[in-house]
Every structure is written in structure tokens, then in C-alpha cells.
Length: 216
Length: 251
Image (tube, rainbow over all chains, first blue to last red; front, side, top):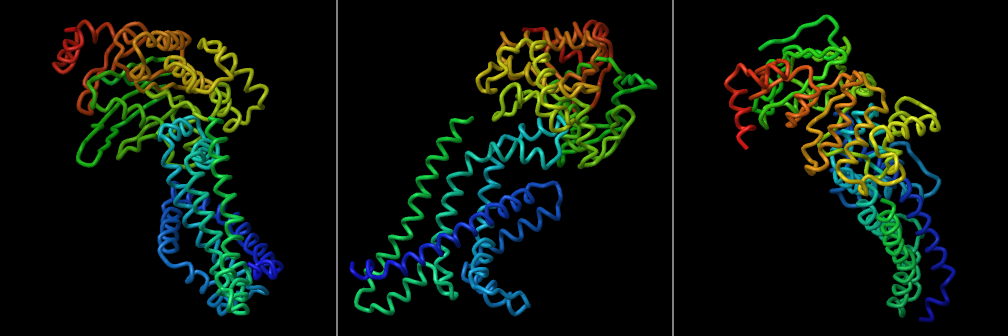
């Protein structure tokens, strides 16, 4: 136990970095994932093809490979970063957006096709049909899977610890090395701080879900 | 098949064909609808009458032939098509009111977002339309709180709010309880009297007799008869139409 209390500053530092990585990647992934889902249902075949290919490739390869691309391959292609955090955010948001795209797409499909037909028949453009009619109604079905994906994102951010980013897991690794006699407690501490983010997220899900349900 | 040709057809279909895979659902359809005309399309289920109705605002694409609205050929997907659809009102069998919007918002969304009408003006027009179809009291409610007949009348008002040149009705009363059918038909009859150009796919023969200028009878993807209601109901020419009418009357 003592090892946790003695090293609270490191834990706190790692916790903040994990929170930062998750928050920024989460927002980017939500936006990019929704754009990907929109492309997937758009009338333009090229956009549909791009979206489908992206999702299939990214969703079906390990996150570590995304990190490897962002942290090692991109710099060799001339895209360099001052901090490894940037690479981590690129990898995490690129990876997570593929899952968000699939969740949003399934939500879009859950809205009866007549809603889109009615919207089109009063002269709405594709973008209006999507943003005014379909997405607001898809929201309700999409919230639970979306929160699941975001929880996974928080945990996935631990991979950044292996790519020179001292987030929660990276800090934990260092602490474990320094306190070989208390590795178990070090890891308990790490787990505790992850729960500090993920459990409220799950709670948020149920609150939002209830709110959206009543609004209908 | 008699096709009534006229110089100023508001809706014109020429040699329209459509297949669903092997199934030939629209076979060489020719149809002209003049301004102010009310055309009722009837026929057994699977005869292609709904597909015909939906093809006119391109909710269904066609394989060949051409469809013109007010002299303009239906554009392919995109802005132009959206613009043209704003001029063609559509009423669906299943109402399709926007489930997350209030009744008032259902009416005003099109004028505000598509035509750029200021909100105050759109609200005023919408209330007038809702009063006209007899559901003014329901304006702040959500669609799910209304009966089927009320929802369908709102759907008619929603289409009218765009000030369309022509209204398409795709079996507007087929999903309604019997006691609600008349309230919807009354609105449609009124609309016909006011001179709206209408194409109505329906099984309501009473409406066809009362409000139609022409009855188009479809079977197996073809227009088999095209006549005045008087002619069609008293003296159908084809055996398909005779057969269809006799089945209707036997119960």
C-alpha cells in the first residue's frame, strides 16, 4: 500500500496524461468516426469505398501496429513530432474512429428508412437528411456502444506506455522497476486510477441514455 | 391502352421501364397528368402502382424511359434532384413523420431548411395548414402521441407546406383503422376541389368515384386502362379490370 501513497505524484502525473490522451483522441475519433459513417451511407460510391476499406483495415489490425506506424513509420516519411504524445493521439484516434464509424453506422441503420425518404421528398440534401433527421434519431441506439468504445479507448491508451509516453501505464512500469518488492501494489494503484476514469464513463452512459430516451 | 396526350402535361412518363432483378415491375409506362388533374391509380397488389408513384420523385430509380415534371427531366442524385423534390409533395402509407420533432416542427422543417423561410413566417403558415387539416390543437405534441389518421393529416400538411406543384399519395389510407380513413379522405377530396394536381395510389374506390378525373388501372406492371371513373366503374374494357372489380364487389 505504502508504495502507492509514496508515489502519488507519479501516479497523478500518469493519470493526467492518460486522461489527456483519452480525451483528445476520443473527441477526434468521435468526429472522424461520424464522418466515416456518413461516408459509408453517402450516395457517392468512392466515399463509401474509402470508408469501408479504412474501417476494415484498421478494425482488423492490432492497435500496436497503428502505434508503430504513427511513432516509427510516419517520422521516417518526414512527419516528425516534438512529442510522442502526438503520435499516440494519431494512433489512438485513427484506431478508435474505425469502431465509432461502425457503431454510428449501425445506429443509422436502426432508423426506419421511411424517415430518410420523407426527408428527401421534402427536398432535403443528403447532408441535411443525415444531420437533421437520421443522426439525432440514431443517437439513442448509439450511446451504449459508443461508451463501450470510449472505455476501451481509455484502456487502449496504455499501449502508449510502450512508445515512450509516460502515461499511467508507463509510470506504473517505471514504478514497478523501481519497487521490485511491491509490484502487485504498484499495479493495484495503476488499476485504481484507470477505474477512476472508466467507471464514471459507464455511469455517464446510463445517465445520457435515460435523458435521450425521455426526449423522444 | 389510351394515353391522354396533352401539350401542358405537368407530370409526364414516357416508355418507363424498371426491373427488380428478374421481375419486370414497370413495363413501358406512358402517362401524362395535366395541371389540376386528379389521377387515381388502382390495381391488385404487386401491379407496380406504388413503384410508379415512387418513381415520379425518384425514390425509385428507373432503368429506361424518361420522367418529366413541369417539362423538366428528373435529374440524377444531387442538389438539382433535391430542388425538384421540393416541388413534388409525397404522402406515404406509413406517414413517416419525423419521430424526434414536434408536429409543428415536422411542418416547418422543410420551409425553413430547404426554402429558407424565416421561422416566424414558417410557424404561422404551418399553424394555418394544421388548422386546415384539423389538427391545430396537436402542434406541440410528438407524432407518436397522435392517432394514425391525425398523423396522416399532418403528413399531408407537411407536404403542402412546401407549396408543391403536384402531390403524390402512396396508399395513404392503407395503414389506417377503418374509422380514421374518412378523415384523411375528406382532406384529400378538399385538396382535389381546390385544384391541386394529384396522383393517388389507393384501394378506396369511393374516393376514385368522388374526386378522380381519371382512373388508371394497373396490372402486372402495365397500364391496362386509363379512363374516367364513370367509364371505368360502369364499363371496364379489359378482362383484368372486370375481374378486379368483380372481386371488390363480391364482399
